[in-house]
Image 1 (cartoon, rainbow, N blue to C red):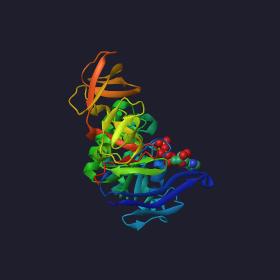
Image 2 (image 1 turned 90 degrees about the vertical axis):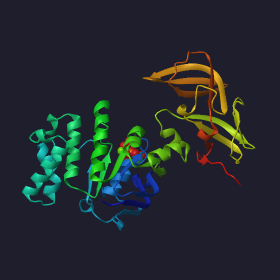
Image 3 (image 1 turned 135 degrees about the vertical axis):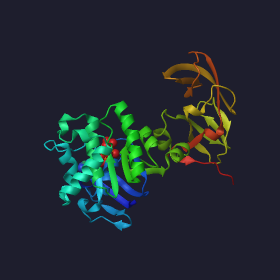
Image 4 (image 1 turned 135 degrees about the horizontal axis):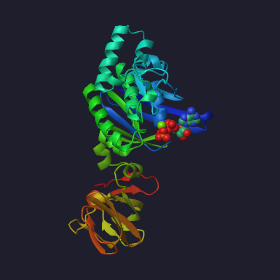
Length: 355
Ligand SMILES: Nc1ncnc2c1ncn2[C@@H]1O[C@H](COP(=O)(O)OP(=O)(O)OP(=O)(O)O)[C@@H](O)[C@H]1O
Ligand SMILES: [Mg+2]
């Protein structure tokens, strides 16, 4: 299975008025499940279409297994793409929808049948082979679209938000099935999603994008634990990170309202944002930096609660299994180790320096 690489890729639309991708440099690892994660309009589909050969870059190179493929047609790239809307042929039965790629490539009938039946069995759609797409549920159609890609045995699978039309429950089951399936195949998968949970749960490798640029790449857990940019810290995580405006003076953090002051190991002076995840603040005084405030809102999520605590002019969200009362004094704490500092202007992570 091939590795995909983008070198200095630029892509714009409307005669340069819209820049969809700005100077992308990216290596997609071989045989792994990679998610392209980012908000709507950040360039995810454009990136996928460039890899598929459905769009040409304005500048830069797309490589598959170390070969530049800029001038190679989509059909010759040995890549299969599953589109968000499935793009099934409404007048063809399921079997023909799945077989079409093999037919176009001139496979003998016997081989086509064998492959399609094998994949249909794996995806548990073998009973639907004589139906038309409109006679299937969304989840079943999604599996047919996936099956059409799988029978081709491509070098790279490109999937553009393939689960977005499914309801929450089917989505969760399908997510697990897909992860297992691609793991077994050891396939190189590029999976586009704007859903951070999906990217975190399914991927070996995540590419976080914003405004046509790559913000960070890496294993899901390392991106979550060690964000390079404010955007990444805010985008990842089930509950949004608390961001506190303030400044650093002589390695001390001072919040804008002056209520929260603590020592840091940051030497840079100036305006910063301090980021602390709701799950890293405890409703106890066990950690070194105290937070004293009033509970102003409690949102219950099954067995846990998200408690909003007002401290001076700031509001923190704290994730806890306890059930605190509203409008009560709260003693909470966090440790310096769990605080990320970001430059107020650029959003870049400021790291402690030990000179
Ligand atoms: N054919 C096109 N013509 C003009 N502008 C386009 C075209 N395709 C994409 N764009 C623009 O390029 C940018 C990136 O679009 P793209 O479809 O890659 O985003 P996306 O990350 O896939 O978003 P979504 O999550 O909403 O699908 C957007 O601003 C979009 O409006
Ligand atoms: Mg898209």
